[in-house]
Length: 87
Image (cartoon, rainbow, N blue to C red; front, side, top):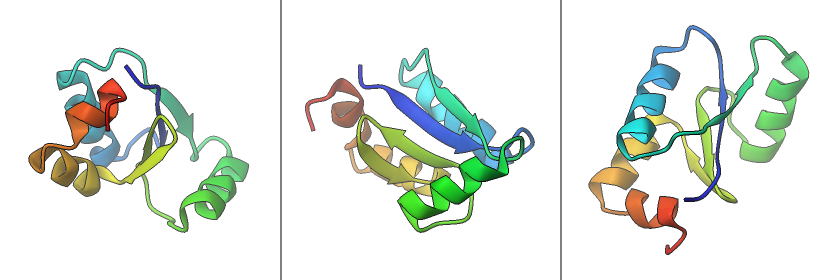
């Protein structure tokens, strides 16, 4: 399974939902980078993604986007292959 990294805050409901989607897919480890605790990480996230909102999710080296992007990817059948590293 590919490594999953998520830029998040502690109280973001979309972050919580995205983690639930990933856990339902069998992801047991998510590297969570808390941008509310480290503002420099938010700046880094914005530089990498061009986005200000959380969550910002990476699976392997692929930037998936936010919660809605993750759900859409799953609905289109692309999430499982991406997690498996076969996409």
